Image 1: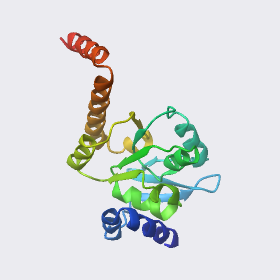
Image 2 (image 1 turned 135 degrees about the vertical axis):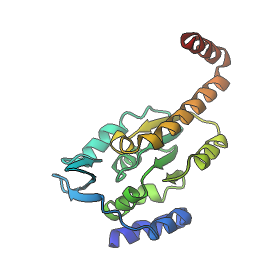
Image 3 (image 1 turned 45 degrees about the vertical axis):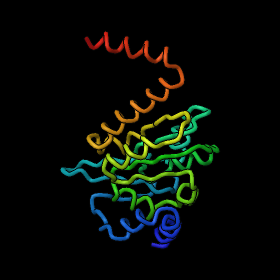
Image 4 (image 1 turned 60 degrees about the vertical axis):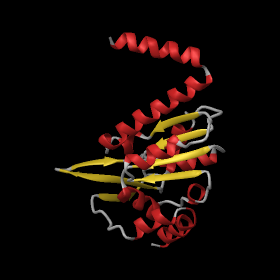
Length: 204
């Protein structure tokens, strides 16, 4: 509870609405936390009939997170992360000195609550360049991207979390692909129009 309160106190300053939703949220019994082999916390979801799904390594979540973060291309100005899990991969981004806008989209409010209970998330929670969408409807997310300032936009999927909610994330991925294409079109209209024509001919 002490770690939860520390994380919540930081989140209240940056996003009081999200903090309020968490304070009124009932703990979900389908989520369990366990110590990984290296002493960190990992989480798993009970799917029923003896099936469980882990969202981080059972051996070394931090090492797994560093490997994930190293795949982010240099020069990315705006990065959208689909799937937060317990947040290790976003902490790894901060340790690698990612300085751009970070947009985090997580489908499961219960999992996010587990993250606040389990991991010290101060570097991510207090950063004013981090934007949160946790179990939000698609419309506010789409509206945010419609008004997003120019810059190199990329997105990265954290599959152990997104695979639990494919119906939620798939439309968001489609929307992001459309935004990325439109930004490329504005930068190089002739090249992008050629790609669009080619795709149209392939579909026909």
